[in-house]
Length: 159
Image (tube, rainbow, N blue to C red; front, side):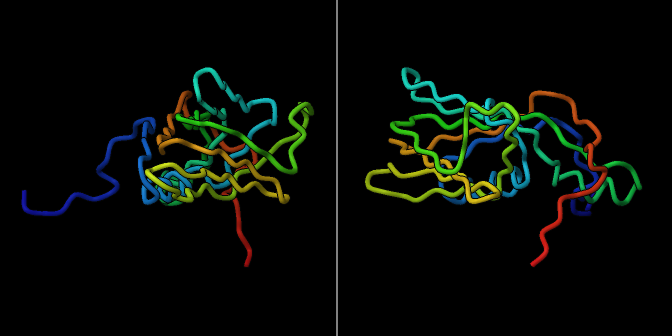
């Protein structure tokens, strides 16, 4: 066979990706853009030096197929985990309010000395989470089957 592979030829499988540098973080940021989660689904485990979020991720990678086949767009529950975390700071978040739903806009990595740095999650509504890390090690793993997005539409970003 002498033709290039097409995106459509790929098999559908849950994501299980890692990020070890700022370029990897850009890819994960794209995949978690518009993910939503209750404030109660953030966990900081200082003894394990781990910060984890259980998010309801919009499946951007599935959007072309959904549009082409005229079927519902999807979300999936995923774990976004950052390891080697030394400190966590947040702004504009009431972690005790179970009704507070947060939405991820971007994830970035600000590199410091010797591989250390800061992972920053910018949230809609001026909220944010800043993780000081000894070394960048982040994973994104889908943990449920995809489900039809309750909104029935893709998130929009009007400029």
